[in-house]
Amino acid sequence: MKINVSITQKHFVYFLFLSIVSIFLVTFYSYHIEKNTLLDRTFNHLASVRVEKAKNLERYFQDRIIEVKILSEPNKFQSIFFNYHKDFETDFFRMYFERFINTNNYYRKIVFLDANNKLLVINKSGYPNTQISNNQYQFYIKISKDIATNTIQLTDYKTEDDSSFHFFIISKIFGKQQAKYLGTLVFDLFTTSINNIMFDYSQYNGLGNTGESYIVGQDFLMRTSSRFKENSINKIKVKTQASINAISGQTGQILTKDYRNVEVLSSYAPLKIAGLNWVIIAEMDLKEALKPIYNLRNSIVIISVILSLIIFILVYIGSKKITNPIIKLNEAATKISKGQFNVKIIPQSNDEIGELINSFNNMSNQLALQSEQIAKDKLFRISAVIDAQEVERQRLSRDIHDGLGQMLLAIKFKLEKIEKLSFGTVKSQVQETIYLIKNSINEIRAVSNNLMPNVLANFGLEEGIKRLCNDSLNSTHILCNFSFQSILHNTLDNRKQIYIFRIVQEIIHNIVKHSNANKTSVNINIGDEYIYINISDDGIGFDLNRQKTGNGVLNIFERVELLNGSVQLKTNAGNGTIYKIKIPIKDEKNKNNIS
Image (cartoon, rainbow, N blue to C red; front, side, top):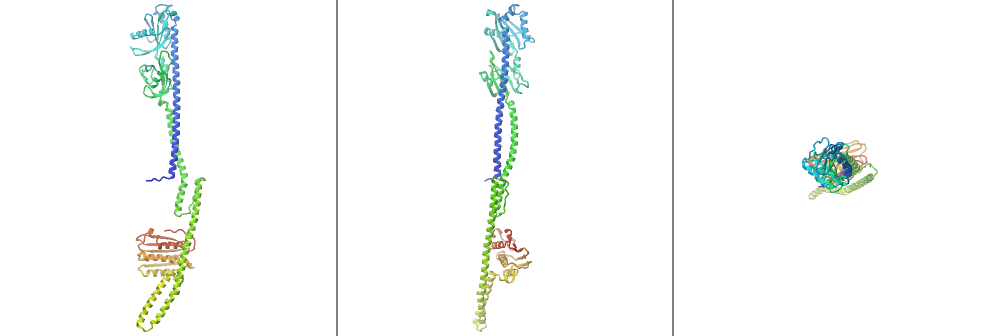
């Protein structure tokens, strides 16, 4: 099934489609540009946080190493250890390190293991327990053997007794000129100090509500506290793509999933801290990072919808403005195809459509002029034919009347003389001949009257139509109701009388021949401007669409048209027929025929 689509609909759909696609492409491009820009900016910010945290952490350990290095210098340590009391458990030795650890907030305790593997534990105030487990003791002995001379080493260590995690700075101490091994100093650092560096989540840190930075060791265990999980140090395994890349020595950024299996933006790098194979990671949830772009996306969607509605309205108005003249042209062309040539369209623009409308108006004017000329020519030809027929009928009527009629009349007179003779047989034959001749004369008169109704010339239109009704209907059972009214002082011209007589004659002929009517009515009213002829019957009627092209009805319409009149013909099967004819008295152009 073929669907008809108007130009307005096509134009509207095309332009709306192109507009929406354009908005979508611009929106899509803008969204992705802004998204990539925001991601790059967030990655750069995370990298800045990571670099800053790494510098602070490296500086922190560097400062602690310098402190330990100062305390571990042979001259300084030996003066403390030997110049006062040779027993390192003396109050002075203990007091010196207690003063150091209590004035410094970075150390939880200091452990000294002398050359005889004797331990001295100096705790920070608030940590009075000086007892250590055997495992810890063995750890201290082990690291005192493993560490090289004059080396300060960093290490992280998980104790087996309390499963806590410790960061140590270890220094082996020798006497002057490296002559004698004095012992090993082990500085146990607070993990809170490192957490304070990494775990800064104030509103000004730039990490938002989900961003965090943390340390991961070579074993992929977290070395600092998690923002989202408690007791995370050395308990949460962070084997993500970011930690794998960083532990392998890479520095970079990646969109991946973190230890919570949440999509994050991650910036990673290995830390440059001797003795600690740590990596630092700064991350932020992707959802929070893209929150501004989501807001922008929602704004773009709203703006796009508003723009689409505006474009919808503008395209609709534009489509109507372009296609309305075309629709008017189509309607006007349809009217012209039906013969209405007096159609004119007023152009609304000076563009190509305006030029097309002007051309159409010119064409309509030309068609109107040509149609009028054709109508005039048609009427002239029909009038000429009918006038010629009437002239020929008049000539035939005169010839028959003056020639054959006179001859037959002379024969009649002669035979009447013969009739007076007393010849019986001849008389009978002569009577029959006279009878035939009379019939011939009557027939010739009837033909003559049909060819040229002399009654019009002798008695006028009223008497002529009255006799026509009587002569035509007397031989039938049809009753005729005839009326004639006229207010004219002067009679109609001969041509108009003949045409009207022929029109009524054709209608009466059709009634007698086809209607099967019982009665008919013929009413003629001649006024100041128009002649009104109303003829009706109660016959069987006919199908107007099928019978209108018949010669009888067609002759009626042509004759009325020659008189610039109009015909209203009403009929249908079983309901009789009505003719309403209106003819102007003056020869001026009237309306088109209406049927």
